[in-house]
Length: 207
Image (cartoon, rainbow, N blue to C red; front, top):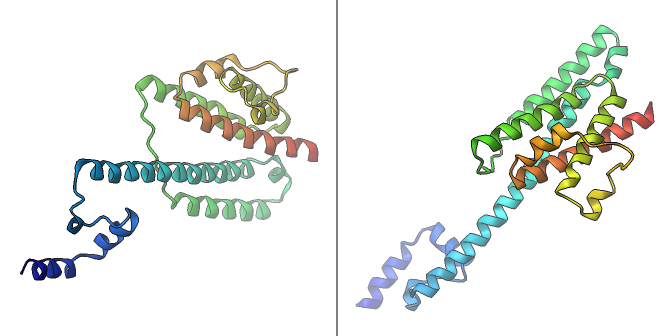
């Protein structure tokens, strides 16, 4: 009788239940393995999967930010001023269309910040945005390098140090704002500056 009852319950199990079993090593109440250690093991696996998901989402967020920065750089490219009005309008419409499509992609990985950290992040982003929208690529590259040099106070890794320029001073205002950000935000800002400097360097060489 008990076996028949369990068989009926098992038949009613949803697709989610079966997927859950597959994901978490066949968790099945019928086995009797419902002790606290068993549940802790399941929670440990869930915790690892959530952390993996956050990291993957952060990578996607960085890719989206890079694309958004690329669009902004092209929108403010000084070579556009050399085009005639019709060509410039066509390019601007294309840029706007790409920007619009990018805005349909919504990614959100929340970083816990207090009010001071929010203000610091806003200040840092404003300074970087000013570099991106600057009309002079040589000056923008110099400012970006100063910002990147300012990041050296909290990162001395080999891959990062290759982009430092010891002949150029760091921007103290930027450094102060950066240090007020969370560690996760600091890492994101450095990657954003690295990508921006690479682009601006290529633009300077072309000129």
